[in-house]
Length: 340
Image (cartoon, rainbow, N blue to C red):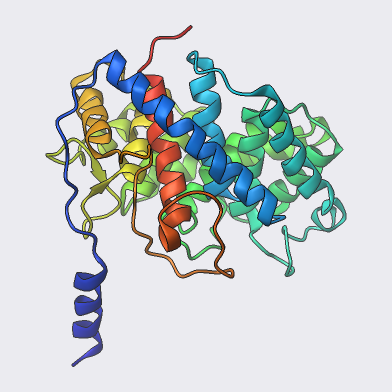
């Protein structure tokens, strides 16, 4: 069997089956029930990872905290003590590597480590938590500004799709974080990198939902024109599936990761209202695929990079992507709730 045939056979084996979508109308009551059911489980994933690992992550910290803080703003009150504990965890983690960041080294353990894939998510999470600029955020921001400084964007160092495998995702998070945390004495460099990234995002070609989601978010964060942001939103809307969801790529069926992130981007950056037909179709998909325990199960398609452990979130070897998927889904659902 040729290598192409083997790759095709492997894809057939590993591609998840189509989702079974229950009939759950996107009423306010159903949306609120779904959010309330998931929040305790997301906290388990956040706190369990912090207790068992010293590292900050996108999948068990940044995205779940996005869901929790978004829900908090819509009346699903978050435990302030728990939020403060996670703020301290992330801040102390990066405080411990200030020296290496100030020397231009990534967040380790090697000379590059996670690179801007990690620091962009970190600045985003710290902003969500209401952290004010400090010497620690200055170090993270200066490292991010200096990384790949000769380029017009920030390339990914990761090979863990979907969340750490796209130059567009890495660039969008860098732009989003630097918008808040660029030190005053680096303002000129920040403006130059923001302008270059915006021009790159306008012209870059997208290959999948992850690219389209973060191109939209990145354009919005970088101050692109209304027409440019609107065009990116239309590109993302055009790939909505018949079941109301979005798939990660053309070889997979709709899932909560792609759908939740798409809805979040469309609402917050693309100005698509929660009662828009496309948005409500997406909500219906999410409500109809939520499991009884409050989670969404998404199959991983990236190779593990650390020793397996249980974080407290379900789905075994798929727990990291499922935790992120549940975070994006809850962030999107919370946006459909009336503001308190």
